[in-house]
Amino acid sequence: MSRSCYLNSGNEPIHVLIVTLGCSKNLVDAECMTRILLDDQMIMVTSPDEADVIVVNTCGFIESAKKEAIDTILEMAEYKTPKGKCSYLIVTGCLAQRYAEDIRRDLPEVDEVIGTSHYQDIAKSIRTLYGNYTGPVENLVSAAGGLSHMRVNRVVSTTYYAWLKIAEGCSNRCAYCAIPMIRGPYISRSMEDLTEDARYLAESGYSEIILTAQDTTKYGLDLYGKRMLPELIRLLSAIDGIRVIRIMYSYSDGITDELVHEMKNNPKVAHYLDMPVQHGDDGVLSAMKRRDTAASITASIQRLREEIPDIILRTTVLVGFPGETRDAFHNLLEQLKIWQFDRLGCFVFSPEEGTDAFEMKGKPAKSVAEKRQKDVMELQQEISLKHNQARLHQINSVTLESVSDDGIFYMGRSYGEAPEVDPTIYVAASEDAPEIGKTYEVEFVDCSPYDITGVIKS
Image (cartoon, rainbow, N blue to C red):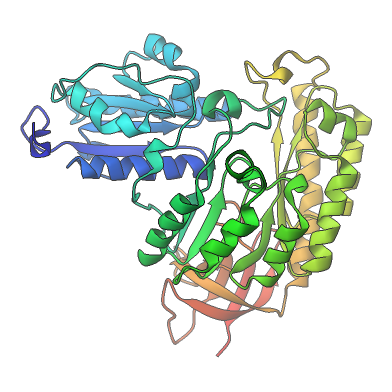
């Protein structure tokens, strides 16, 4: 059967919508699935009203993410009513991998469940639902792991920047984290695959490449026998068209001298690092099965700031973990004062089935954990404001990405802001209207704990 025959019941091409939830890794998976569907002559749409098939690409990392996923599935199921255009609803992603049987049993609205190891089968699954595929019927949820779906020139859904997933899965086995169960062990993509992917992105006009994985600093250990992130960065920076390389999701024990040297001396590497430390008390870190101690984290931060004085550091911490006493939480606050992260996100512990922490005793009451989260964020507001004030009257290169709703400001990012998680640089509009997508020299003139305002230097 030729691909041109893959039609819906009305003998029209199949229109597909992918709704993606969760992190940047999920977004890359959705971009890969989009490429696979387009190669199968299906048509991608942006509204559920236009879709014959709706794919909900879920996150299942913590309880709030699972709730959002289920709510979204039920919302999209409304488009399968007799008055709607949608014929089939498919669930993919982490929730599908982890709770496939529950979804099949409890959500009859769902027509197919595809796990994280079977994204490459998305088109075949849709053809099977329409009766246009006559091959063997397979279980589309199996043991996690594999990179086959990523070997495509994906359809990037972002503007001006693109995520480059350098590895799949995780082998760290932190006590609170379900990712190894969902995504399988850490599997590095080959340097050849990554340079080919990055070259395609650069040729497509994406000048900022953001490296992402569950642990970017572990890249290469499984494939080459040693940490190869610095070498990968050197290869990527040699590609014409790549202007900025940004590193996300690093571990402090992977901040090697070679990596620091590369970040310091390679002009294409943003002086920015996302380093989720999770806590500042050694007892809690040990119970979390983290490899770090407060002292080792301090040493990594000191080395980074000594070698790269203008570096912007981001982190996330977790409060309310079992065994987090009042003293342990006090230690976290004291370490945050020492570490002085420019940016910080704080989450309340969510017990996840199958993890070591699920049955641990001594979990603080929800009200206590939420109060601790509030205390962390109040402290961080003071720290972030101080750091933003220190950047006032500096001149930074800012890439403009959009215009504010009121039209008063252009909105963009400098080297110090990662998309989606960090503050926006607001650039005052001028008589000579700047162009979206271009980079300008901007002087920072005002700030809050979360945002910076600047003016373009003439």
